Length: 143
View 1 (spheres, rainbow, N blue to C red):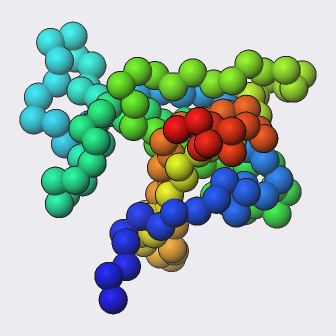
View 2 (spheres, rainbow, N blue to C red):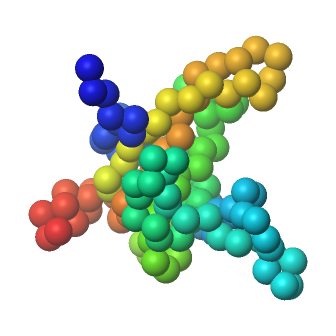
View 3 (cartoon, rainbow, N blue to C red):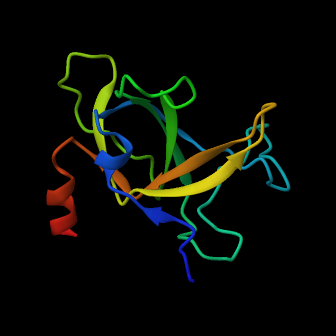
């Protein structure tokens, strides 16, 4: 069986009650052989161990899951986006301090989180972009 490592998922399967963007920041490459002269770490690139990937810089979107049933470890998640420039969120017209977003091209990669005394299955999320909720289908048709 040739199961893809990254599993394509719909935004609404992952965030059934919606997602709110808290911030976007560069992903630091902790495995980089050298840091910049100013001491700041090099930004990670989208390159898989098998050599695949876009080679573009990675950006971490910190997202609040609006699902009230989300557990403590799932209430805030990171969705990584590979893009040449920092992704720009849609305009926030919600009245909340966080911007409602919908991710397009969303994939999930399972891994074992063994950072505590009880290992658990966790998911690494990637997306090709973010749009205003309800606009993902329009963006897909335009592409």
